[in-house]
Length: 189
Image (cartoon, rainbow, N blue to C red; front, side, top):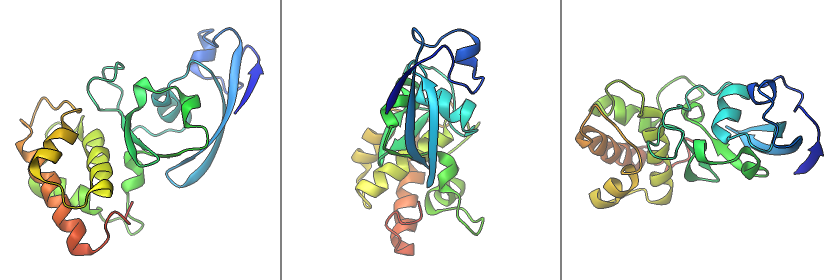
């Protein structure tokens, strides 16, 4: 990561337009986003959520509480679920970042996690779904056969106001089954 003294990051982002460049400091970062190499010069106060949505166009990362409470903005950083609203963008320098857009299969079909949520109705309004999908992906990479108590523990960091969580729990259990049946053990993502 390279620190630069400047008044703007050069991209015309909203932070610079608002004059929020953290005393004129910006940093150059490099990371992998959904399998593609990224380089950005950003003000040091930019969150990962803002970078992903505003600069990288990843609108599947939801902006909701912006306080690391609801989980709608969950992404994977080096396979670990993280609230992107509470992560400075410069923290991902040298890392692998995955958003819900990374789950798309090359042939256009749903991956096992997405298919399980479809089959079990693990969504209602859909606002929390991208975060739930990323949490489930992270969980199944760590443990392809989680017990219900572990599933409950993992999804407890994400808020859903529609489903009552039972359908989400069933979706995660079904995703584990589909993953095992396909023999992919998380290789799809």
